Image 1 (cartoon, helix red, strand yellow):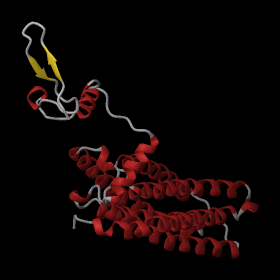
Image 2: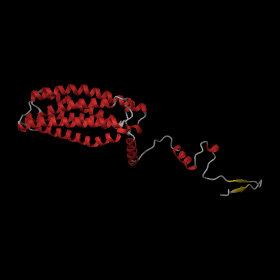
Image 3: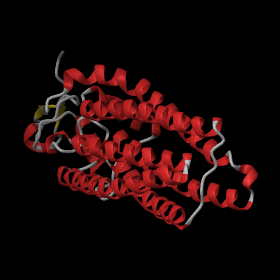
Image 4: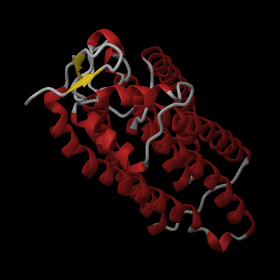
Length: 290
């Protein structure tokens, strides 16, 4: 094409007009096109405002990072923040192991001495909490794998298997007590164990849910769900014992609560396996931390 020329009326000298699709690299310092320069200027207009995303954009980001073998937390947290939350998750898990192990021993003692199906269910639930906390510790033992989706999904699959097996044991004990019409025996030891169990498990559940949400960790959230179920079962021991104390004809409440808790744990474990087994296969080629 023939370049366009303009004439300066003062000097009668002509000079070419630059093509608008190109920018002098000396003038803008980068050699970017006009469109790129405008985008940079628009981004620079609001330096103090973080970039916001719509729900659709967040979903796309989540899908893209998971497709690369990473969790969504890799897009949200700075490296030092991720490591800080990882250490907190480890501390909470170790505290959970110590607390729930003590509660499990006490609940097993109550179960065998007082013939309580819900106490047995809680004891098994507390044992499950110990196992799930160990799985979370394995999940976050590798500092480099804090955002690893593959490691996350493996932990969730193991949790799902443990949930299913534990629920079968809880259901078996509760149904056995219902068939044999075994009412729970009420005393101060049962009350104290149920109260301490309920409050401690509730606190652990809150801590795990918060950390799981920040780290976008399904394993931590599952561990928190397990602690929440433990809190419900701890208080259910208290409720069923109090009801039986005043209404002996409602002896079946204890066993019924055990059956319901067993079914909830079983359903959650099956859902976890259905969700996570395909993801383990999808992300196994992206594991690069071991």
